[in-house]
Image 1 (cartoon, helix red, strand yellow):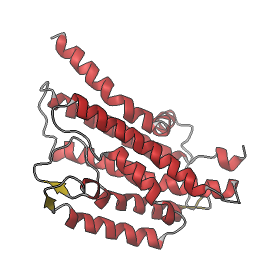
Image 2: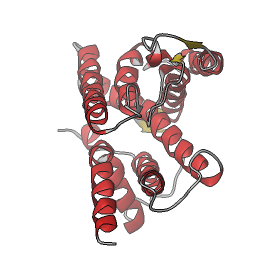
Image 3: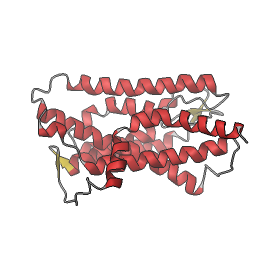
Length: 249
């Protein structure tokens, strides 16, 4: 394995780690409220800001990370054969985890089944992003268009749930996690624009002090590199701890 394949950008892992910590904290407060242990306003104020900020940062970094992976693949495999299938396989894998969450929430919860949550979005976005991975202006313009269309699309309400993935909801729809392609795929595309601007040919285009050996940075970077695993296990752990705590009081 050459140096290009080994090289990581600590600031990207750091930001992803910060996003995952914010997400876990948000879900702790959410679960406390959901189970009636403590009351928090999750739909406005600081809680809403923390939840949306963590999700937006995480989804944006998906776009940045895709450009890094694409650049690394180009440099290490000049033939570039089957590169689309590599990304399609990765996207399908993440989407499959989303389907597992759909199955679990449909089985366990009385309401609020997650039909198209953040993992569904990321899985589909990885596949749809492929044509944009070597472009900047196209990703930027399309990203803004998708976000603007999202403002319009999310105001549409219909009888059928078949267009949930686009952002068109049926009447009375309720879910615990919802990130449709409009507008959220636009955030991924803005991440692609940023990645292709700041990390050209897998090289950082800006100066930054090397904090990679700082303990806090290393710890957050470690969490960032394992964000999918943390996302999958943190809710069962939080819920289990809270239920155990409730049963003891």
